[in-house]
Length: 327
Image (cartoon, rainbow, N blue to C red; front, side, top):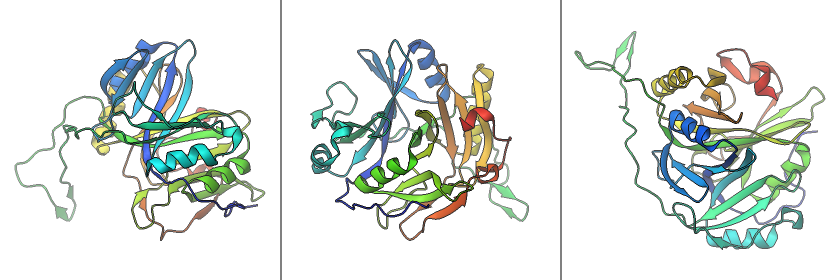
């Protein structure tokens, strides 16, 4: 049974891009040290929450909140208009417990928000609008010119030289969840939002168990996926993924994290679905965060691809898939 068009098409809430993710940590100081070593830029602390930005224009891309328990606090997407927030509050099913539209008073960038809860597993999901963008930062990496065997692009007497440092985070690219009922989640997110499946992955029986959603922005090019989920026995966040500058920056970041004593989850390697070069790390609370570069861009001319679940579908080069990644 393959997932198809929703059975009850509705006016859809128009998402524009991922904005940020929220995590709660029992050891907030360890989480903040990891964030700096991962390449986030700390902006400010408000109450129990410390906010970090990338070098793009989002006011923050990750929020770390001090808490008695480490847990995922949800991802936020920018919506096209305030009317989308109002419509979300009015139209989402009762089990989503959607909040009213409210001002974001204690976060960088301000704006307005509606929070709802996944109707199957109850994890939080945030919709935001009207946040003030910030000035783009210089990541401190050049746009490189590469010399190939038969094509020399770099001028003579020019060098490629780098310093050891974290990989600078640009933006939040995507996040992923393990859900307990794939079919119900697929029906909900494809019915109420402008998510479109770039890839659907099925098991041996032909039943879809994983989706990689992109946003339907018509002719606009968007990332291959911004939200994915797969079915498993227990709901949990799988990982959040952040774009960095290029491959050199990514591997410099890999070495930086390794030398700081953090635990690598998987990488460096090249994905098949999405094509990203990936590098996954465990933070001190055990959450997985990814650096990626060189992901695919799609518009709505690209059809949905259907694939059978298999280890070879996850990467074309790199270390073997560890068991900890598949949980």
